[in-house]
Amino acid sequence: MQRTTRWLAAATLLALSAGAQAQVNQVRVWAAACANCHGTEGRAQPGMIGLAGRNKDELLQQLLAFKNGQRPATIMHQLSKGYSDEQLAQLAAYFAAQKK
View (cartoon, helix red, strand yellow):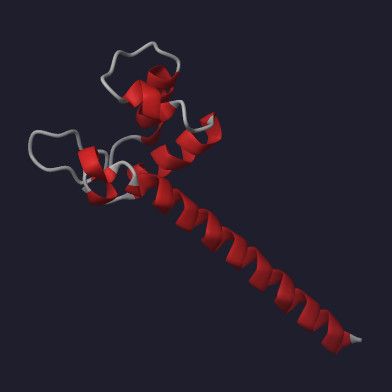
């Protein structure tokens, strides 16, 4: 019985870690779409706006402002509408965690 409990606990931990890894990979896929303008992992080339290492809350506020039409843009208002607010929060957290 104790051996079965250990196997069940190990399987549960494995499943949880796999789910967390899949979530991180999904955010990286979303972030890759930003690379054309904002650089790989948010480290932009000179003249472009870098996202890496910026404040998570500020990034989210700006993304939501684009999505809601409160902030003018050439393309960001269209791109941001393709994501839920939760997805935008995950993107903001991802870029905030990147080194400049």
